[in-house]
Image (cartoon, rainbow, N blue to C red):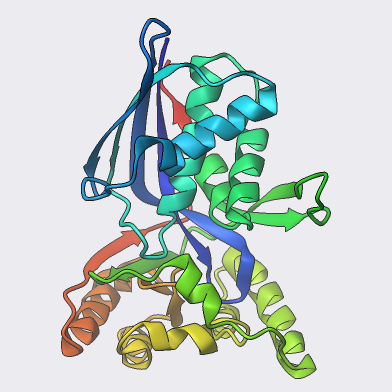
Length: 310
C-alpha cells in the first residue's frame, strides 16, 4: 500500500484573526508512505527544510497525524511504515510547517488505508492536535479560512470545529520576509498575558471584523486597521528583532500594514500586486539592518489545499 500527498504552508492570524483566520501559502510539503505488513518498524526520510530534523520517526508530526487518523477510524497502526517527506515550508517561522505535517500524516493514512475520513475530518484532527484551527484549515482546504470552535474540549471529547472559506479580493498581494531564526509556538504562547483589558478586547473584535471584510473587499484602510493587532502582537513583537522598522519599511514602500506571520519569525505585509516587489525588497533591507538575511515570498489568496496523487 502506498500514497502520496501534497500540503501547502500557511500564514495565520493576519493581525486581527488570532487563532481563527489563516491562509494557504505557496510553499509545499510532499509526503509519501509505503506500508509493508511483512516488515516491522517506522522509518522516516526527510529532505528540504526538514533535512536537519533529528526526532525519531515515531515522534514526527507526520506520524502523529497518521496515528490520529487511524485512531479516529478505529484502525490499528500498520506494523511497518516507510515515510518519505520533503518540504519547502520553513520550520518554526510562522508559516504552518507543523500543521502541514499533521494534515499530511492524516491524509496519508486516509488514502493508503482507505479510511474514508475526508478533508473536514483531517482538518479537525490536525486542529485538535495543534489546539487551534488557523493553520490546519487552510492547509487542508486551501485559500483563506475561518475556523471556529463549536464546543470546548473535555476529558471525554476533543473540540470540534466549523470551517468556512473566506473571500480574498484579487487586488491583494501577501508579502512575506522570512529570517533565518526560529520562534517556537511554545515560546510565542509563553509571552501572552493571561488576561487583557475590556478595551483591548473590544478593539480586537473590531479588528477581526475589519480583517474579514477587508480581505473580501480589498479595502486598504480596513486591512491597515486589522493588521495593527492589540491582542497578541504587542507581546510577541519582541521576539522578532527590528519588528517596528520592518513594518515601517513595508508601509513606506506601499503596504497597507504589516504584522507577524503566525507567531513569527516571518513578517507579513499586505499590499497591491504591482507594489509587491518593492515592499518585499524594503522588508528584506530592514531585516538586513538588524543583521538578518531574510528570504522573501509573494503570494495571493488563491493557493490550493491538500491534494492526493491518484
